[in-house]
Amino acid sequence: MLSPQLFHKILGVAFSLLLYCAEGKPAVNSPPPGSRNLSEDRTDERFMLGSDLLVDSEMEGVICQIEYRISRLERVLYFLKMITASGGKIFATSEKKADFHTTLTKCKEAGGSIATPRNPDENDAILYFVKTFNTYAYLGIKECLITSTFQFLGSTQLSYTNWHLNEPSGKGEEECVEMYTDGTWNDKSCNKNRLIVCQF
Ligand code: MMA
Ligand code: CA
Image 1 (cartoon, rainbow, N blue to C red):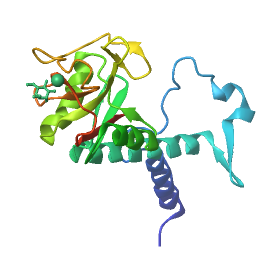
Image 2 (tube, rainbow, N blue to C red):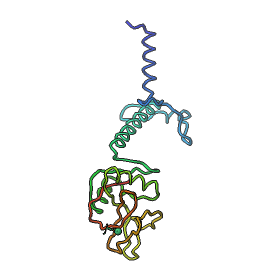
Image 3 (cartoon, rainbow, N blue to C red):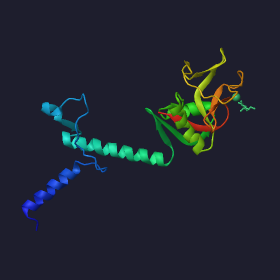
Image 4 (cartoon, rainbow, N blue to C red):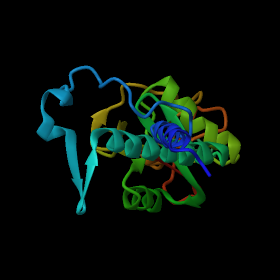
């Protein structure tokens, strides 16, 4: 039989373990700068979840678990070479191929948009998939037929380019842009099958 003292000790340890994430990160940490100090306002210290009251420390534990589970899923996707991050963006591939318009649709359906490199770092992020799957990818850049210049989708001027030597060369005949396996760009007809790469 456990003595009441030992029982309370075990209970205490079990509860403090509950406050830790599976990663070993404390569930109760200091609030982010700028956030209100909840302990100043007792009414804010409890949250409703269904019919149960969750105290602040329990809520922190739940958030910590959710963060852990999200980071675990991210690690799986990195492992499968399906996502890569650059700056604030996540680039992702379905590993499928499609023409330009289907790529636009697929990325939109997933809640993202076609991968559009706006700096060398983002270009490298997209290149990671092009190299990994050894397949060119369409980019979110199109020819503006009136001026025969290329623009980001949404009609913004190209603030960054990485054209291959002597490209663009299509003179109005190649309205889309693909990324080669060295990361340089080529203007190309839009009806080829290219690796689907989206950004989120
Ligand atoms: C192909 C086509 C063009 C590209 C040239 C480069 C022959 O056309 O991919 O878009 O500019 O190759 O030689
Ligand atoms: Ca070309």
